[in-house]
Length: 227
Length: 281
Image 1 (tube, rainbow over the protein chains, first blue to last red):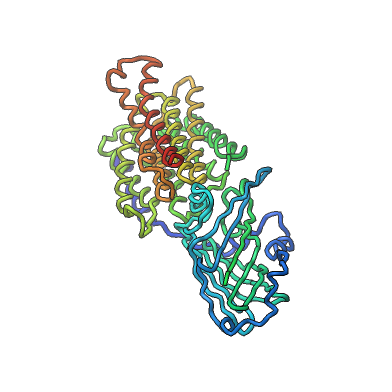
Image 2 (tube, each protein chain N blue to C red):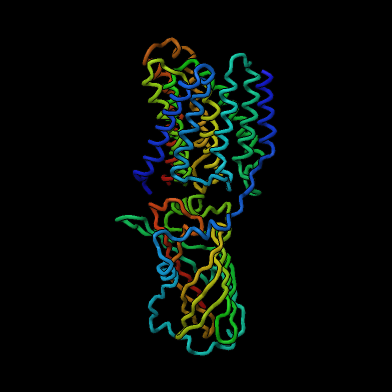
């Protein structure tokens, strides 16, 4: 019995030093989680797919108006929509659409060009067309909103192209993992800022890897900023 | 999101096989005292087999729910030990309190906005786990191993269904690994002519089932009510009704069926209430 109690005390002392301590993301973990079966060229291509730009949207050759030039434009759910679409693996993809209803941020215009963009998303504000799907996406299976209540994007460079096209590069932080992404966008700075970007993100690169054999890894993102 | 063949193989068949093999090996290689450890070690081994094969969580816990496997391992130091000869009821309860309290601290999240508070969750869960463990362990002397494994398996399956309805397939699969392990124990106990008993399993079983339901409850955004999380935990303890007349006066399959009725009823109610909460209205 003494041995029994000694073991018990030993277990208690050992365990008493333990506490729930979040383990910091290993430096190489997020970086190593590249999209499987995808060459770097393919991945870059997926992240920078440029949608065909209808003629009606090509307005940005015109100079930004005085109210837009050299200005910081606040972003919120009132003028910004971030929508995602993800499909199931297999013969019945059954794509599911959702969006985030709470976000804040700002876009900075320098001269006649969009200079920077920052967005902070309330992950728990995600909404889909199906309540149970919304609950599932908020769970640790996907967005784990209790542990990671915020997702952020902060641009590091915005390269101006022709006809209102820009290439935005920046750091996307999702599930506590930060990775640099690039995507094309169409920008119009006449009488305010409008922006539209469509691109794909590999969710598994950010540690959202549950059900990779059931739900596609690539998620379609559409960011729309309206005047 | 249906389960694939890989899910069933890794998440059910593999845990079942691992639990069965470990159970047989421990009993064969460590006769005597090893009989107290075989069931719990096999259950933990089967659970970890599925958890690892399906990569259901990080091996180094980064979230509160990733401690569930380690809490189950720690229970191995208590459950079988508390069943040793010469251990009084008080001496058996104190280690149950210790392991339950420690598991609760690991498994309950420390969110500021958790309601009720983390402390309340820890205290209530500890109390519930201690009561259930204390009631379950003596049942191993009254019921055969295959029967007990079957009841535990149904309870774990109920918990898994509740977790799925509550909005997490991952948590449902994690508890599903325990279902597989218990199925393996059921088969091996059924086939063993010596009719082995599941001694020392109560602590590990309770921590796995009650632990995952605690995790599922705090993480859920669904309308699944509290009753659905609690009823499966207390269901197996109602097997004690089998020791009360008139059930105790029955014999054979009649007694078995009568004793099973209440636990199964509670499991059905747990799932039914969850289904109604999620799909009705």
